Length: 370
Image 1: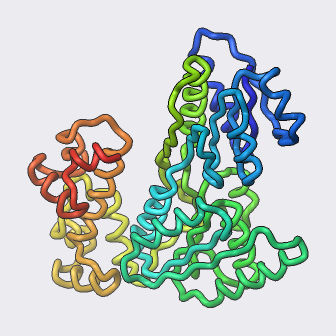
Image 2 (image 1 turned 180 degrees about the horizontal axis):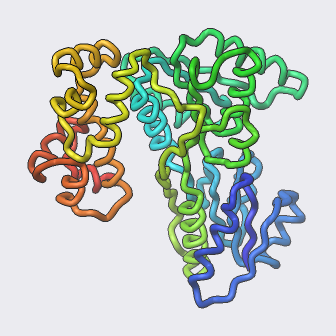
């Protein structure tokens, strides 16, 4: 029999069952909040063969390490040293957030999270590293404050939001923060997404629906995390001497909604061209074709585009192609030649050269390192 402890309101518990259904063994699964009292933990090994747990507090981490049954942790808040963990890839989440805003032409960025959460620190650091010299600010909140201080932290958030320039992309550590930011922005007459755009993490449908503006969010791939956690637990039960590992699961992508449905430019023609590049960059579209499509000369279009974005049209086309290539290298089993074709390159040679110029690594070595 297995015990699972819930982490959020998504279906991660049900997801883990998908692995067990594939096995010939008959499993009994229970889930619920785990009592970390000494007596309750002592009873665990009598009742359960294994445990999948979302351990947030340091005392929970210590308790997991002391258990004498196989355990898999799925929280990156406090990684146990002697327990296998299957967790989101927080660095990849931060990079994906930056790319989402950059694709929409944002050049001002902000991050909001809880200072005590290691995963928030990792996401913020990766986010910031992708922004180069663009303006960037952070707001770190103390999530351990007394309940009566909640209003004080709300005031800090409002002041922070009011200080941001127009067209700032705000990356929240998770959807709970994203909804809170959105609610306070609307209460303060700060338009979302026309003044600030907000992106969360976790793709929690109920949180998005309860927000005053539906939230764009990064899908952390709960299915993949759940499946791998169940797989690792099954292996530990079958092979008790299995080594302790930490596996980081990359996010599936951004689920776009109203909170980031905005291009950070006042030039409608440039916004139209950006949309065209998003759709057709990997189909081989070039600058003359873009100019023909919007009905102005290539020279005028290039000048207006650089003024609005700080980039050339070719740079923007290449960025969309490289983003697509990176996603395929990380998540697909396609060959390098197939990826080159899907990204609009005439040959593997040109693709490999462009990819190395963009990332500093060849496609082959990039895939091997991920």
